[in-house]
Length: 197
Image 1 (cartoon, rainbow, N blue to C red):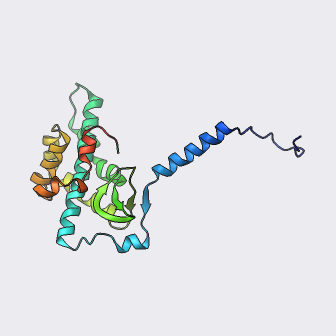
Image 2: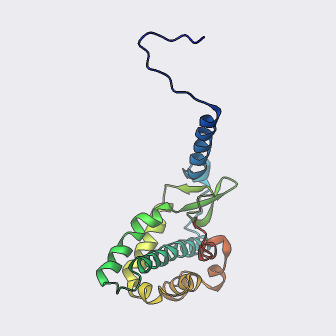
Image 3: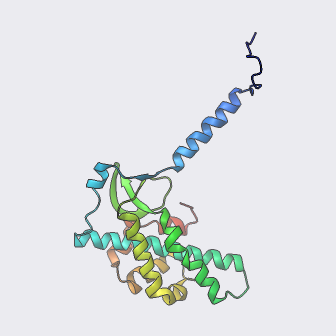
């Protein structure tokens, strides 16, 4: 027999199935929350962008991430418009949001709980957000857009890896032959295969 307080609202039945669904939802949400504010230890181990070699790797990685987002944005626009001619203002509206919202998902990938020199938005890997890292990729993205919008549009129908190479090695000149092919600095090969990060 269950004791019920007078005037108490009826209680909902909570069976094992409902508990399992609740648990699965909680685990799912925990796995998606991998973008973290950095700890003091991580802050002390942030890459030193004053070191020219580190700065070059950070710039290349930030460029590669930005180029992926420009390419994906334009591909999505072409898919939405199908065979219809895309007007100039539609390109502008689509590209304007890349540096403010799309690259905002990027952070420095963590390895052994310490920041690396790779900007990533891969939700399956923890990333450090905050401090200068977010501003760094946004600034590079803004520079690419404001200084090279015509090149972004001209190269946008290339396959993703070729577009990233064109933008970051030939146009922006922030990646060299070694850094453009360094898998530890970019996710574009995974993205080109259709995997969403």
